[in-house]
Length: 368
Image 1 (cartoon, rainbow, N blue to C red):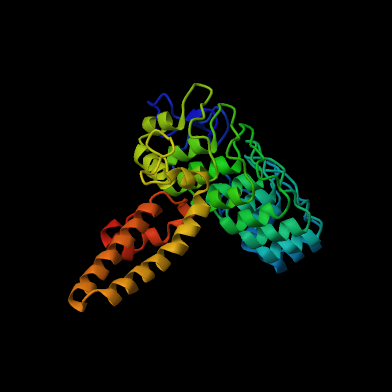
Image 2: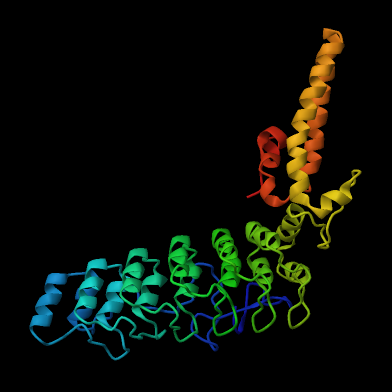
């Protein structure tokens, strides 16, 4: 999502993603890559003072001795602005983080190549408890790094739902955008994290928000092609015909990025044809169904079993036994067929019965 082309560079409609090291960097398209850039890993450079190594391994006793010598304190920073708290946070050294905070460490100090805070370093590794500790002591989740990502964006990159929930409870606006206009919903859809997509939508994220190039979350969902992400976005009212700044609709984007199958499957699940138009049921009274699908389904699923039971009892009571049993079975299968037809047009969240082996048979249980 940013200034470099994504998965299919030959596709004219391919959206654009932010690079991992700034506007001029080579794009990194692997879903496992870190948008934070080359944050330091577990081992600091050999030339770093001992204080950094001590913070990394969480040796509180050694850190206390170092402070007692007055050679270092908790506010120490190296040439890149990195503090011991950064190292403790990224290595999930909870006790060390708490110790450094109590000793006066600057909790919102920016440092490193990405110019990020200890909170962002911890979030980049999905260190839930360390993130929570830093937040409790005043860490600001809205501070952005050199690439314009705040802590919620960084947490979304890894798809850690618990961490995202924790941050949303800090009052971060769910539609807060990065420097390119990408919301967390767009990132979750692009990464193919249906749980995060569902969470952001339930939290009130806008499906109509667009980035600098006019891409919506639905466009970004079609880059990865996750059927469940696309399905959720359609359920919450994403514009199926929204155009980007270059006139690309979701259908064109799906074609350019070879995710047409996922697009069509999601459309069908939500009651649309392959062109994105509402499918009109063929049975009599379908106009009432389209006015209120959920109400119609609730009434139908309540009344059909009653009608089936009444019909079966009447058949068994008035026909000879050798005739009533096959007729009753035939009527039962008929009612099942009717139910199956109705469920084809039901809202996606009401199709659980429709997806069971009892209704579909084991060979059709392939939708993931």
